[in-house]
Amino acid sequence: MDHNPEPRKTRIQTENEARILDAALDAFSIHGFRGATVDQIAEGAGMSKPNLLYYFRRKQDIYEALIDRLLDTWLEPLESLNENGDPIPELRMYIRRKLEMSRDFPRESRLFANEILQGAPRIETMLETRLKGLVDEKSQVIAGWMKAGRLNKADPRHMIFAIWSTTQHYADFDVQVRAVLGPDRGGDGRFEDAARFLETLFLEGLKPRA
Amino acid sequence: MDHNPEPRKTRIQTENEARILDAALDAFSIHGFRGATVDQIAEGAGMSKPNLLYYFRRKQDIYEALIDRLLDTWLEPLESLNENGDPIPELRMYIRRKLEMSRDFPRESRLFANEILQGAPRIETMLETRLKGLVDEKSQVIAGWMKAGRLNKADPRHMIFAIWSTTQHYADFDVQVRAVLGPDRGGDGRFEDAARFLETLFLEGLKPRA
DNA sequence: ATAGAGTTTTATCAAACAGTCAATTTCCGT
DNA sequence: ACGGAAATTGACTGTTTGATAAAACTCTAT
Image (cartoon, rainbow over all chains, first blue to last red; front, side, top):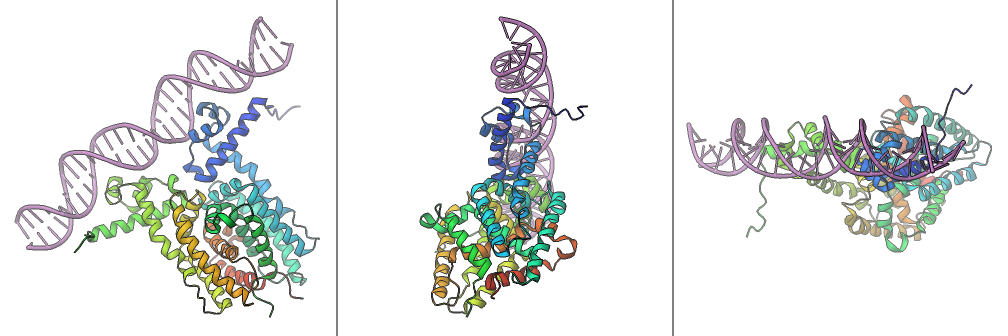
């Protein structure tokens, strides 16, 4: 019995949905849900507004499709934090991967930032269930490492916040970062400089050993 | 000669402008410039839209007034970083004050975040001049401390980014922070927990001395 | 108390907005 | 090549939005 007659997608449908989501990512990541317009997205996707609305009936449907697609990718680095690995390389890896995501998917990062800034009206439930669940789980792992003396004792949850904020900063506040660094240091090398700094910060801290 | 006949403000004018700016801060900090509406601000300020536009002729004028008022307050903590003080207490103080600003002025922080997220079209020049100038100056101070062996060697500019991002995270991503911490740890104590963690992170790092 | 500046409201506008509809055109398996 | 499904379009609707004009009202200094 075919109880889930998932309508198979045509070539054109697949292509156009991809074009729409890409253009919508441009718009929503900069202006947020309310600030972005359907006309703007349609123009970015190279099609008329009615045609766009043939694929996504409401503006909100586009937005939700984007958020859904984003979540798995976004949480994957934390999910793959391995309890049985060495704490230091595990942490180093996590920071590096989060920073790479800021470099490679800045629009996705900004979309997420915009949603949270606006009070996360559309993903609040997900924050309280899936995200909280994941952080709770990984906090236990980190707390275990700390108890075993393999990491300095500190609040694991705030540690995760610190990794999120420092790495996502290079996507969300990119304009500011580049303005402050100037043309010389603000080029492509800024992510390597950031990686070096964050490794020092998170592992060694700033106070000399004395 | 009175070449700048600054029109002195009446009582009503002073009161109403304050009410408008307060309501506008609510709206712009959540929805950004495009997403916030004049009607919404007028309602928040408890007056009709034409009345509001009697005080600020264009929506953009309200926004710019807010940004102007914000900037001095926002940069003050970094400005007061004292070259002649001890590096460790100076850093500790700077982090603490930035965190207090996130706690006491979350709307202002979100307004700023929204502006940067949107590519900072209205303050780009200021970022490249005033902000860059200040960061350049204070980076020299920090670099001096590092050269003297009073701080671990690291990129001062990225160090400032790290302090900005970690502290502002508690204002800009407040919804997420509270969702992840849950009702028990997400209460008013979260800023003290954050302060403790950030002090450990920035001074000691996470790798045990061993 | 009153004149004039300062304030508020009613009515209104054109543009931008999300979304609909019927008619047309394109695509694609047979 | 053809028929039906899929895709596209232009014309349109009702609403929201930023902004204006003019008339009516209120405050305050004299």
